[in-house]
Structures are given as C-alpha cells and as structure tokens.
Image (tube, rainbow, N blue to C red; front, side):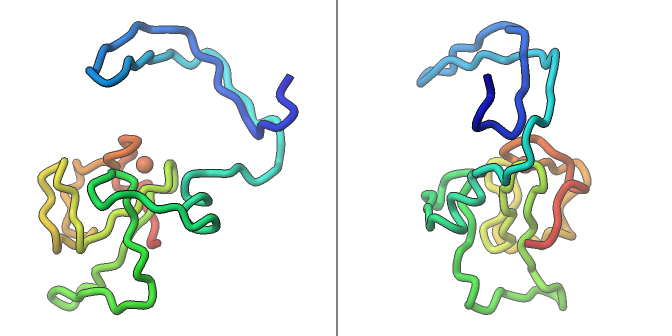
Length: 129
Ligand code: FE
C-alpha cells in the first residue's frame, strides 16, 4: 500500500559493498511507477523551503547567498546550474574538488565528460539554477 508515495522503484538485490562506515546494497530496477501527482518532498525542497543547510564540504552543499553578486570570469556569468535529476547545484565559485574541478571554473568550461557528483547525470541534465 503506497498511500503517501508519489512513485516507487522495485529492485532486485544485486550485491553488497562494505564502504567502511556503512554497507551499500545496489539494486537492479525491475519495476517502477508514478502512483500520485503530489509534489514530492525532495532534498532541494528541504533546503529551499525548510531552510536546511549542508556543510561546505558536502556534495549537496548549495551556495545560498542569492542576493550577492556572483563572480564573473572572462565575460561569463559564472551562474550556478542545478541537476534536474537530483537537485545538486554546481557552484562555479566552489568547483568540484572530488572531480578535480578547481574553484572559479564556469559550468560552460566543465569537460563534457563531467557528471553530477551526486547521481552521475550527464552535464546535459543540468539547468541554470
Ligand atoms: Fe544529480
């Protein structure tokens, strides 16, 4: 019974990985369905509406100084871009150290092979935040 869900994924256990602090159980999706039309409470909603914060070192950290002027570099707007899959926001002022992207790197200058550090989505799955 899925009274308060907007969708579900049914997965078949594909193994387990001990990653030190916890165990990851990857699953092979065998079924999925959207079962409601309510707006899901996403992590992005938690940050934007509930005022939730992430530490600066977290992959989900989002620059929140929206009233401050963003830095510009070589005529580029240095705009932030949001992953439309998971809500992660790429902030050019922060870069993506886990992927070797230096602070001050415009989204447009990210290599085409760069992917969302949270969900692995391609660069084409991002929109201006
Ligand atoms: Fe993502």
